[in-house]
Length: 358
Image (tube, rainbow, N blue to C red):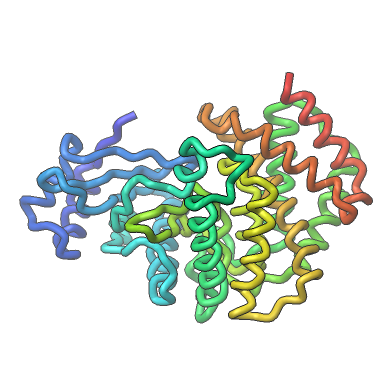
């Protein structure tokens, strides 16, 4: 669906383009003509994206909020404030050219169309992923991830967060394991609540929360939110950032259903991450592995819940293909010894796989 900017939004966008020194007044008016711009599509986001061009050359990306509510404007504010903070720490995010507090319009550097995801799906044999293209690209991502997590936490102001200031037990139960139960088990599959499952999930969340929240957390760190431009990796969609534990974004990257990384690649990258983060902070590796598995479980639950919701409620059929891989990953993780005391959720996931397969 093609969208158009209201006269109010268009006027504010023109001012931003001129104030940022990107275009003159007449050029800005021309660039904001929908016929001279390209509408881009976010994956799960309801925000609106336009590639603005002048003389057929890209100028920037305009991002408009999904609506005019307080949450919409707060999300845009977070993108501006967190983005500028990350750039001040030399984290590879896009340049930010302008933000209008009244409308929530943002102007970002145009990073092109190449995502890390394109390297994964570009005809490669997934059983032989340690090759000259994929592993070096992911290695650079891991290096920059460790840098972002540590330096992004320095002088981070929690008031910049529009959603919540930290990753904690309540968030896990509401937005991750709870999301899985509501959107997938009850919503998509139409099943009744299972007695005792909430108690198991609460115990898992309680254990997971012991990892703390001392580092910058992107919270949607996957291959479709990582761009590659001029040989450099760049991170987008960070406006949900907050303080959190180290292992979450790493798990998000390695178990990413969009990528389907082989076990060999995951292990290689995990080891490399340990070396990279060790340059910033000291880890007790066995403890970190335990925390990583618990955080990967939470992220996996969020994946399944989100895919189910976006497919069933938002009618975004693209996401249906990733439900089965995410469920398979979840079932495999639940076979680890640290989850052996949770028979109800293990059984529920197994039944969910069978029901979804039908």
